[in-house]
Image (cartoon, rainbow over all chains, first blue to last red; front, side, top):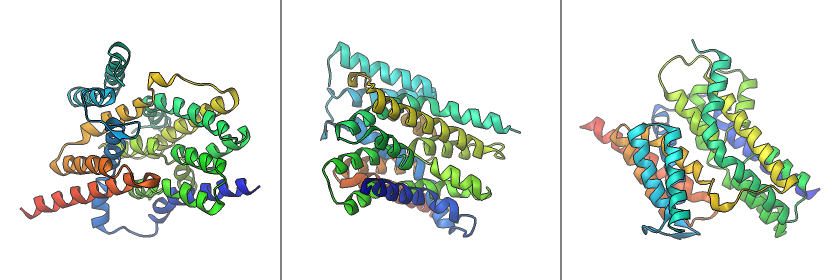
Length: 107
Length: 230
């Protein structure tokens, strides 16, 4: 019973966080400086999600060329830069990762 | 003008590359929750009630470790704090919607739905029905999360870890970010956020992500101000 209350509380509060500004926006106007700053949220948050996934391996920083995710990620950045194509970036990145993993046995 | 159904299905389509990574993540969550001696029904209920992958993983572990309820709740919620940024970032675009739309879209607001939706809202063109795109992206992710956790929880289905399908999330986000790095301020914001995320990686409860994002935003705004002052 306790457990159900636990996850309900987490669910409710998480929902409250998600709803917060979406619900308030009709009633209050954000200062223009804040709206300005929000312009950078997508670029900042997506980069902050991606970079650690490339450079951390099993919880340790690995900037060596033996890090398959790092190499595949860098090549994928190049593909995205040139092609601006999501599917191509996805296929290219996974392809390189699999080659490095299965043919060259990199971690 | 873009139609409602047109926007809805564009949202679903935009979410598809991300779903490749969501499926194994959902399966792993399901299997790992069961190994934490949590009942199948409860593990599935978490996917519906909390609907946030990393938070669910950690909460399942803490429940198994019989940590006090207050600590589990605080931990589970702090991991989801980043959603406040998503909410603030999307709020100007959903401002005009009726309340019934806002309560539904807020429930569907995840990292994955946010990423495609905000980019769509920012592209020029007719924006009349873009909330349908948000709904399509959000529901596609929701369905996939519920079904893949169910497959993990009830069938014990697994995809070999060696396939590294989780990497598709990073690849998709790379494909999203690179094309929008058009001005110096955005590039600096991304660089600072990326380096910041590596430096702050060891912070508990995924707080490194929030810190790094905040640093990136400050850097972007700073550069923008300097350029204006020139």
